[in-house]
Length: 386
Ligand code: KIV
Ligand code: ZN
Image 1 (cartoon, rainbow, N blue to C red):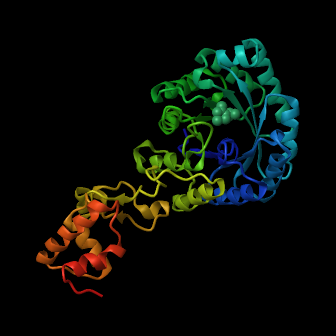
Image 2 (tube, protein in one colour; image 1 turned 45 degrees about the vertical axis):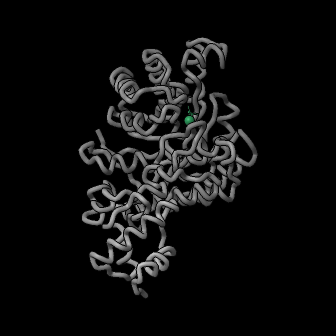
Image 3 (cartoon, protein in one colour; image 1 turned 30 degrees about the horizontal axis):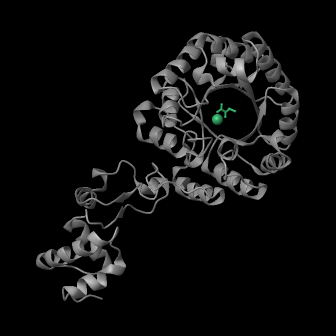
């Protein structure tokens, strides 16, 4: 089995569905080009039937994207698919993403339907999409809560109708990693023809498990992960792109990798945050402002001696200049001496003891001691500097 995992970026579709994150065409184009440079394999550009603005965004993105496939979402009906196909006309590598809910709760309450009718609609939609493009992805919405036997049947039928990618969404973020992994394995072992298509993970983060579930998906044979930059997305968000990419990079023994240029991760994260007006939480893995900041004395001492004592990722690998030592009341002498040296002041052992006591007085009053506090601290101890 090939060890390349395709990255399907849905920042501009699932990510953009978030209240307050809506983007106009100009912003979507800026982000689409950045995400393309990052090295993703597929960009889901929008849901064209949802609004004229989104239709236009998919048209414009289709014109400019050079490397990735451009994908448009549709529900399982001809009108949606026709509009998606129209919006993708100029794409070099177009993909239509169509599908329908397959869980009991969706079939009964959303569609007031039954399993046989759902399979018929799914087959017809895929076949209709295939009239326009060679690359058709089918999503079994709420696959996470869909009975595996029925899910396998749906998958087998849509493959026969021409689906090239099978998306198995944990739409409500319900599954445990082992459960989601087993679901993927079950499909791979029980669906005729599945060896000819790509199986895709699309996980939501309602229980904080989206990244773990996607990783278990690829460990069990899926070869595409649907994700968003900064993990933005409906409710608690989608699988975070930067997290899955760096997990696969850090764990070479999985023998799985992506095409992503990780050195661009920080820059793209900041651009998405800026244009969506959606701040990144400081403790966000990989791209949060504290991801490479050390504030406790024990950790600072270790990092100053050897970065690897408390960092598993080289910040340069994700586009962050360097790790930072943050001076707080929990910092030790080693961190203070290190920062003073950077500031141009070399302290003797005795001076360091004196300055450290003065530093703690300031640090107990403030959240963080910065370079602007140093002149007063040094003056109070009669230490010449500058
Ligand atoms: O979460 C989901 O099920 C989706 C589908 C539309 C793919 O976003
Ligand atoms: Zn989703």
